[in-house]
Image (cartoon, rainbow, N blue to C red; front, side, top):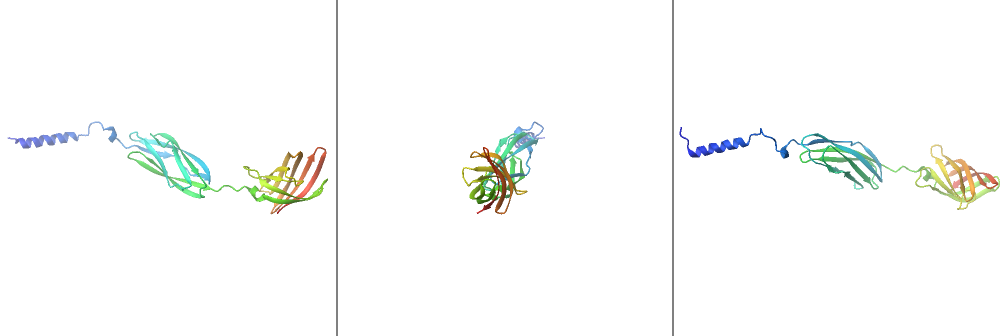
Length: 243
């Protein structure tokens, strides 16, 4: 059979192309199996309106060629920022998401966390609940008062005093001017908002030792205390009324 030269050339070209499509050889690494992974540790968080919370997570390798994965967040309120440490690495690796709130509004925020490789990405929902600062019960007692009532030695008291909170503690108050109305006398007392009671633990102020207890309701504090200075001791049973 006679073979036409042009046809022979076409046949050889077809044979070469067919051979180049033979996939029996090793895969080029850049076209290998897609990296797959998962992020674990994304559980609901709570934080205060101005607060910092760190969430440890793990980007866990599942299958495919090793490659780098980038972490990102979306859906943050404008009063909150977030960052990953580290943000980019090759699974399996650990990271920490640090959330910082600056006077954020209270409520539940559904934050989107994305982990992305070159050809594969996964999105996760991370709920963050922002809570208001707890109210210090001692704040209800802050103000100016008059103290009136009998003492065993000084007789009937009648003077002004003031109460303030002891920052940063809860349920502690400063009573300035107890017993004699002098601002140099400053007593620290503990309150129990459950029973509405007050306790003055033994302490020295301006050379006098004070101790006592009482209760409060509305705009009044009823208190029994002892004032001791040297050999001088007296018992007082007074009522402090908020002005």
